[in-house]
Image 1 (spheres, rainbow, N blue to C red):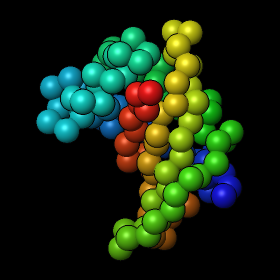
Image 2 (tube, rainbow, N blue to C red; image 1 turned 180 degrees about the horizontal axis):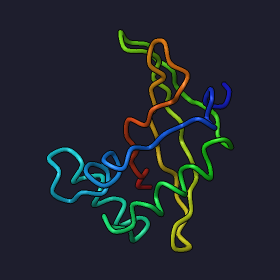
Image 3 (cartoon, one colour; image 1 turned 135 degrees about the vertical axis):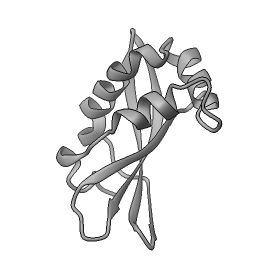
Length: 113
């Protein structure tokens, strides 16, 4: 495969990290938050660290899956990130919406191995 198209334009809205991926009280995100805490030792207070780690690696790893829906093209990009000297793989999902060039962050989760 190849790198995420226009990865240098990628965005990660704060609410996706703080309100979903690292929120231990979010209905669907609470499980992700638990794994991020176990794997990296991070909590909701460390959202900016997670964002920076994702941005630092996004242009270094290839897309592993592509699927299309009525909104655009969804890309899966596994990344190796390091936070607090702990390294692990996370899986990220992004969408490039129809009539857009910007890869918009959908979600991520730590791969607990």
